[in-house]
Amino acid sequence: MEQTLSIIKPDAVKKNVVGKILDRFESNGLRIAAMKKVWLSRAEAKAFYAVHKDRPFFDELVDFMVSGPVVVSVLEGENAVAKNRELMGATDPKEAAPGTIRADFAESIDANAVHGSDSLENAEKEIAFFFAKREIF
Image (cartoon, rainbow, N blue to C red; front, side, top):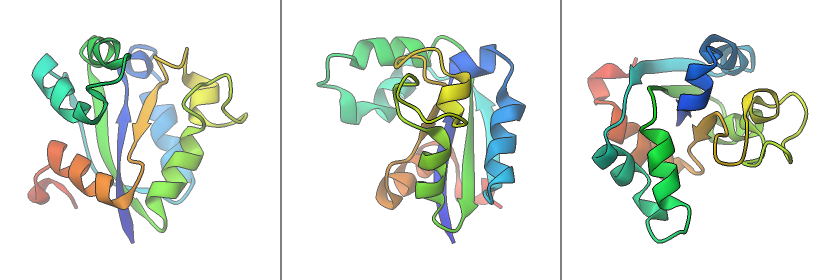
């Protein structure tokens, strides 16, 4: 049983599609083991996305992630990392397969509705960034 982190980003929260996105996870065999709504500070967004700090889009990504609240959750299930990434679709919604979260809810490559861990190692780090062990059931 794997765990992965999911973030429903400010654009999707603003559009009021959180429930629809969560339903995609649950309807596809992922269980929500923890969840909360937070509004990231600039320092938190910079720390979370530090891996991208030298990339040209970093400042815009931070600006976007602090523009409104996000919903973070720990998803659990068989092959949770791969399953979540499959459900999300390609980073650029124009390239995302029909029926994926980004194809259905994202506005652009920058406002792309969701984030998901890209590996088990990163999932562990990302989950620990947002959740204490006692918050995960």
